[in-house]
Length: 286
Image (cartoon, one colour):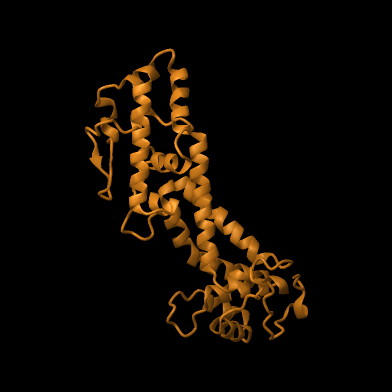
């Protein structure tokens, strides 16, 4: 539903605008009583006081305002044309979001984290500032759920983009048949060939083929072998043996293969075993 972009000549009306978005079953979204109370209190304060309170991060502080409340106030400032308050409130909200977004994207590397960080905030900001639709309604009911989902979506998008950009996995990064010279993963689960020892190991027949004039043709064969893996098995395999990701971690903020794919640690290990069996058979046929 469209909201009037010139509410009361730039002043608060004192009334809290209701949500209009419906759940799949048809029920209209509803803010919690606490959020409604926070908004009502904020609407009775001056812009400077509201912006000052928005910077309070202690959730136990009596003047703390929830993220859901901040979303409403940002939209309200936007509707009234109060750009100064809108920017101050948005910056306060971003300050709270940044640690979560950065921690979830951290394993992608600095440049990708920065790219993903801006992508997530851009989408969230566009939803909040879209006064002509109800896109910002759910953010006033449960702010963190869509933020976390959008962050995961961005994470998976970048992983997928990397996989497509690097269609061929370097053969020296594939696990050997006997797992010799391998080290335990940081999480104590599974093994991988140490980077500093790759070129010290005996060259496999497949690696020798890469170095010949026919290497391009053989590389295409390897690509076909990878393509023959089930998509989720291929993704798990590449993330571990190519990207060096952990299968799991005790740190709840660290992105791991299990969390990225939404599978248990045991299932991920089964994927590794399936991939290794596939490559073992492929080597025997080569």
